[in-house]
Image (cartoon, rainbow, N blue to C red; front, side, top):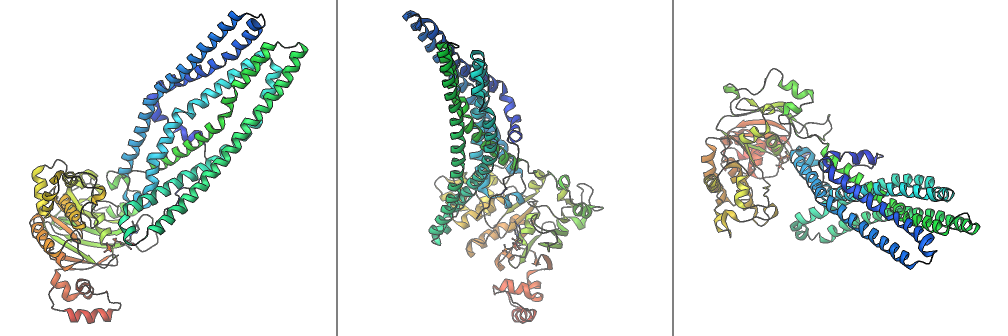
Length: 624
Ligand SMILES: Nc1ncnc2c1ncn2[C@@H]1O[C@H](COP(=O)(O)OP(=O)(O)OP(=O)(O)O)[C@@H](O)[C@H]1O
């Protein structure tokens, strides 16, 4: 089950939200214009009590119906102007803020593409999805609404109090009295609410992960009858989120109630005191009406501060969550650019000075003292790969064989630099991959993994992803190498749209398309991680025959679990517990290496050296 990634911490909401400024800057003119229009509209509302005062002390007192009608007309015009200005505000901000949201989202997507594989190994996808959707929506809403209205309300309250004080300062002081306790309450609320808001948004991320996993793994869920347990896991998370949302609602209810009640008590007190003053003749009835109407007009700006603060806190949390991802360093273009650890530099010292053409000994694919430990592993733990020295000669195909978990996939992932080495170096025709620009590396090396990933695109687009600029001819050739003639039977041939992850195709069909993608660009180096595992023996033989022709000019490393795949290779390297324990032809290894014989025989791995020897003797000389 995915876990919440970051513990909520104390942080300044203002500082978090200020980080949005570079995105808001391009639309600042419209945003400020919209805010000004909103302030104007809100302050127009404060003129209404002044007109009321004029009406009560003037036409009403003088029993002048014409004056009353005129006053009513003023009120109507003011109302219309207020509504028109608020409409104008919306029009001013809607389009630019949608643009801000779009650029935040585009930057997040671009950044995600450039983050190291290790980051994606660590982060649940639901957490990233929720940041790219719900959190960004919250940020757009914040810029459109709470940010504007916090400014509008603050200005309205300020102007309102100036009017109140101008009318009767003693009563103004009565209304101002709750300001200090309200500020203390708001600050307390902000602290508590920010923690709960963070919790809720992380829990939405966890829930998204479960939904995504259940949808992508629907075959497993149904096949193993796990519907109920998945539903239970979902319910538990949904329940947890519900609890957090209720906590948020309780905090909101609490602040809302206090923010409503305290000013109303002050207005009540002002009403009583004002009435006494009118009775004593110290105040005109019109002034009291205007005073109370102004105070009532300020009720909404004051009361709404509670939920505006709540929304701002949620937005600050959303900004934190967004920048948590954006702050992760992207992959450097070359490993040297990003090399921080001394081991890497030491390993390269004196052996590589930038990209250079290698001598004969360095031609082909060379692993030179390669060591690798996953980024989240304990630095003192045994490395997954240690002291790997291996050379695949130019144009040679080397099979990589080893027990499950021995590190084959890890080793193949190091060549296209999906992970950076923790020691040693890998050379491609004498060029250290650490010195190669990533784009150049991708041109030289193509990969196909056992688990073939296809994208929601056409068959042709999926294959052509393997080579920039490749056309119809290359596409056809690659499909023919991969024996993917099934494509012609699809409803629209190569233009057929394949579903999410290619799930509308069989495993073998997907593998063949992934293989076609790997060979379409005629790469100099080909890395295949057991790419034919899902094919029947006849199709595998056909693919191998076609692949052999491609492999003639290609230096290839092929992870193989089956003797039939090993047959593709000129030589075999045996990987045992993260080390290369033997290199030779299939027949040589079969004769001399018990572990290899075991692996190729398909029997279970023997536990003791004696057992291995016994089996090797039995297997000796056998052909597969
Ligand atoms: N992302 C990762 N983070 C940490 N450890 C990992 C990661 N991926 C693999 N490992 C560990 O590295 C070791 C080697 O895994 P790897 O996938 O390379 O083995 P393999 O030989 O390809 O196995 P198989 O034949 O089953 O595919 C395993 O112990 C595995 O648990």
